[in-house]
Image (cartoon, rainbow, N blue to C red; front, side, top):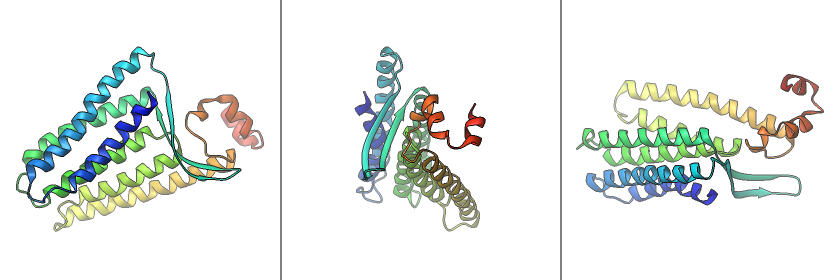
Length: 222
C-alpha cells in the first residue's frame, strides 16, 4: 500500500512536465493534460481510500529517498499517510479539479494560458508533498514549491500593479514561514540528534527518552 503513495505524490509532477512540452497556443491539449492529471489522481485516490478503509485505516510511512548518510546521521525524504492526510488530499484534489474546470473556459484566449495551467499543476505537486510529508525536511521542500507557485499565480497578470504588489506580500509571508520551519528543524536535530519523522513523535516514550537531558522540555511535555 505504501508504494501507491508515490503515484499520488509524483503524478502531478509528471503532468506538470508533460504540460511544458505542449505548444503555447494549443489550449485544448494544455487544459486536457491538467484535467486528466488531477482527475486520474482523484479517481485513483478514492479507490485507494476504499481499499485503505477495508484494511482498517492503517498509518502508512514511506521512507523514499536517502539523500545523505553518515554513521551518525541520515537525511531522507519521508512520506506519511493517515486520516488527516487523507482528508487534506481529498479536499485539495477536488478543489484543484474545480479550479481547472472553471479556468479551462475562463482563461480562453488569455495570454499565458499555458503558464497558468502549468503553474497550477506545479502548485498541486507542492501541496501534495506538504500534505504527504513525514518529516520536517520533506515538508520544507514542498513548502518552497508552494511559495514559488503562489507568487507566480498571484502575479499572473504581471503587467498590473496590484497583482504584483500582493504577490510580493505573499512571498514575504512565505519567507517568514521559512524561518519558522528552519528553526523547527534545528530544534528537532538539537533535541533528538537525528532526522525524526512525525510518526516517531507520536511515541511518547521515545520523545521523553530523548528529551530527558532538557528538563524544561520534559516538564512541559508532561
